[in-house]
Amino acid sequence: MPKSPTVDGQPSGDSRRRSLGALLRRVHLGGPVSRAGLAEWLGVNRSTVLALTSELVAAGLVREGFPELTGRAGRPSLVVRPASDRVYVLAFDIAVDRLVAARVGLGGGIQDRREAHRARAGVDLETVVGVLADLGRQLHRAAAEGAVCVGVGASYCGMIRPGDGMVRFGPDLGWVDQAFGAELERRLDLGLPVLVGNEAHLGALAEHQRGVGVGVRNLVYLHGDVGVGGGIIVGGELLGGDGGYGSEVGHMLVNPYDGRPCGCGSRGCLEAEVGERALLDAAGRPADLTGRDAVREVVEAAGRGEPAARDALRTIGDWLGIGVANVINLFNPGMVVFGGVLREVYRGAAPHVQRRIAANVLPVSRTRAQLRVCALGDDATLVGAAELGFARLLADPLGVRAG
Ligand SMILES: [Zn+2]
Image (cartoon, rainbow, N blue to C red; front, side):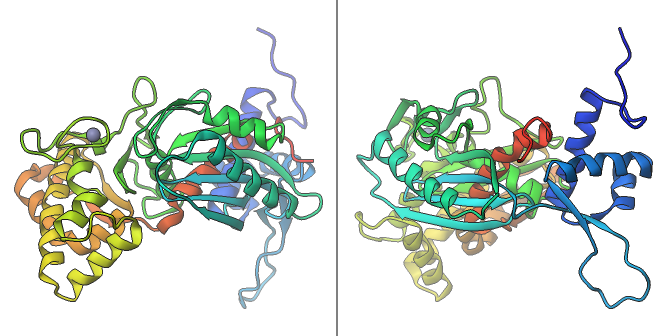
């Protein structure tokens, strides 16, 4: 095979693309860093970093400059930082109760956002995509002059076919085989593919890359919306399964005989026992009351000592503990992260969850698994969608060259 040509004595082709991608990823996820720091991190010499950085500067993806003043004496060394004001993605979060759109700069900062609330039932693809496309175009128009959109990512509360963003099954919205990704791409008309992922998968990646799970290579993320989604990271990689539909922790069977009916058509799934309706019913709240605020109210009421709310959290906490005990025994994670509305539920029910784990998890795994609430709050899935949008750029920075 012919040897790859070189530029400035540096390798070209795949290896160069990988190095550029790795460097840009480090700056994107880790923030400003010196050339010396980049050389050490990439395991290359300084002249190689200089050449790589120069290419990214020329492409308008990073800038070099002096760091923020630290008050320390001596000549500060130059740092490489993402060109956040020039390069951005559009990120969308399609949750059961709300639609969120954001413009997210390289480096991960949310620059601008728009949100729409919507009814849960009877909302068709056309309506959802129409609202999202309007919000996306507003954000695109409001971007600084000269700024370039390099990708579009979306988080959806259902099972997504990875290749084309087809919603295979969205039980909470009643969607089956809806061409969501393709339709949003057509309506946005930006000449960019729309990449779509399952909300809990993206929440797991976001917490792993930017949240409480940074540096944790084996992590289980549980996302509560109306139901419960799961994202499992093994060895730093999301466990997608054969078709990308894996990690459905919410449909783990925990109560087959007298369990509550589940949106998937089964009975006694984890999400049927710990989801929004289970908690509100257990707390004696009216059947027409729904939403994150209602769940949060029950947790607050339990904190004030309301007996019905406390009982509800004990029941829900026990079921949640059963589910978490199973995933800890199966995957031996270093961390279990509670996201979405499960963040509040876990805060209110932690002793009950922990009691079940103490009783049912094998000791060698139990001692390793930290239980944490997500660090990115309600934005975990939106941040994950943005990272999906940046994926093409980070894989091939000059192929998706900005400007
Ligand atoms: Zn189910």
